[in-house]
Length: 219
Length: 219
Image (tube, rainbow over all chains, first blue to last red):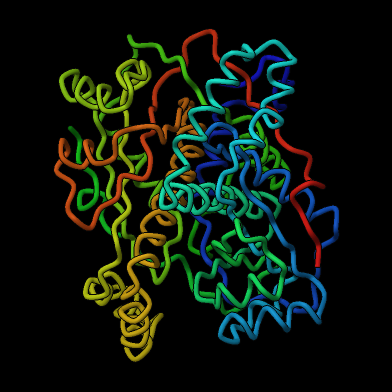
């Protein structure tokens, strides 16, 4: 699974395993942020670079991220998110957008993989034809926008935690208003707002989870 | 963000940060699995326990995971997934299902958080009313099923990587056929199939990603 060109980590595998699991186990949705602590443009870029390591169908990468950091644009977004304070108090609130897939963009997104000799050109052509047929159905296209953006959002939350930042996801907002105010295209769906920054005191712990036996079937 | 009750890890923070980031950076979608190596029921349970640490709107936890591990059921699933070999060659293929939210279940899913004194009972009631209103719209309800399942699926991929396992997501399958063959309810949407197991030689590296500048706007 790991590329052999990646340098081995400087710690033993058991340490790696333990810490990544702890990160998943301990992440919690943060509501209270320290409004005095910002993040740099380099930190935002790093977060999005990591978020986009998430997989997408056909490697479509059908997403866009709008990092709302200025006081003025945060205020606009907060008003569209039922006045949730974390939109302005977090260092940045990211609008995670999924895009209805456009198969015509796929050859470009697979080109470097074809050029490097990994994917035969005939396979890239077949994927493009298959994507065109699959997303002709509007519900399937919307599902893919929501799915890709959500895979990216979850990876972004884990990346934030790994960088020592807290995150708070929101799905309660005026989607049409956000689309207008932030110039989303017709093909873009704002799937989630994600507040990212430094946690303030007073946050809830992770909410209790259902027992695994309730939601897992082994067939 | 982290609960103070969690024991501190036995390694320095910089090591934790580095390894979790490496895990996100190096995860790749696996297509070739070693069919001779299985996973235990305990490993499957652990994977799903970790996957369900992902957040859901209102803490709905509107998901179900069907871990298809028997040769007979894998063969049924493979036929419904355009005969993709990884469905049967991976140790287990997990059907990640999202559920259209049922607000009537919310009081039960928030109860322990209310009982522990974190959430006022009036707030749990308000969340339940809000969820009922929000998901009356069928598209919003379907979006939530797809979003929750995708957040869980991404977390499951990272959990698998942390446990030394490879994973291969699939969205190309006969959703109606899967729903029938695996007894999904009317409210359940099969959002993804995720093959999990031990990688065989010959997998592709991670596919190239678009430059961050193409998909990030800082506002």
